[in-house]
Amino acid sequence: MDKVRFGIVGCGRIAQRHAEHIHNKGELVAVCDVVKEKADEMAKKYGVKAYCSPEEMFAAEKNIDVMSICSPNGLHAEHAIKALTAGFHALCEKPMALTVADCGRMIQAAERANKRLFAIKQNRYNPPVAAVKQLLDEDRLGRIYSVQLNCFWNRNPDYYHNSWKGTLKLDGGTLFTQFSHFVDLLYWLIGDVDTVQAYLGNFHHQGIIEFEDTGVVILKFTGGAIGAINYTVNSYGKNMEGSLTIFGEKGTVKIGGQYLNELEYQNIEGYRIENLPEGAKANNYGNYQGSMSNHDKVYDNLVEVLRNNASISTSSFEGLKTVEIIEKIYKAATRI
Image: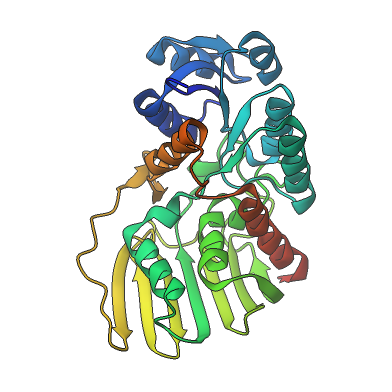
């Protein structure tokens, strides 16, 4: 296989990031969006073909290897399944889907078609996150007692204006769109979740979004640790913090900053994390910023998997587990 060839489904904000990395790592062949102007604009920028529907692109472009699914959350399952069934590998933006059942259907479609289904989990590549993962894999913190995840961001009304964001059907909720990467890190670092309690409220976005803008969650992990998630998009004026603190038998460590991009605290028995490389800058979307921009590393892994049969960095099963934990939280929550 020479250059891996890609198509993009959905030409919104995050698709711009995908197109940039595809241009650097492979070959962009075609794009599609139901809003013709968006598809035409991206196609003109990269000199590729534009389509108005995924089905049209899937039928016409049989030389594509991978379809990057960048459509609204609630359409990920439909578009990924159609891409896989049509004979393409699929790379799915977060969240993988809005229900565990849909994630299962996506995995089954990949297995039936003998194609790869990749999930985007770029925060795993943040240098302090990778360093703490190594700590845990080497059992340097001993037994994990508890964990605290803080997600304090700002999303003003302009973010949701004239958009699918904020709708239950296509967005799904704040944990899906803003903080699913953070929930993934809980699963990746601490393990699966057994039981959940939660309170959710919409304090500042009434009439703007159809779900919560704030939540407090208590978790019991299958490994015995307990944890809490405090999250909101009501941080006044700008994003404040994305942090994860782990309290263990042999140490305490905190990853902080706005996007889990800084090692803020460590006190570990007989060990110290040092000489961390500088992390990637956050995704910049104009009036606000999102998670760390590590999509290049996701695409590096994808290319290595398809070219050299390397190990996949984030399996579709792990994408499903993130959705499963969020689904547990929403089902258990008391809404106030």
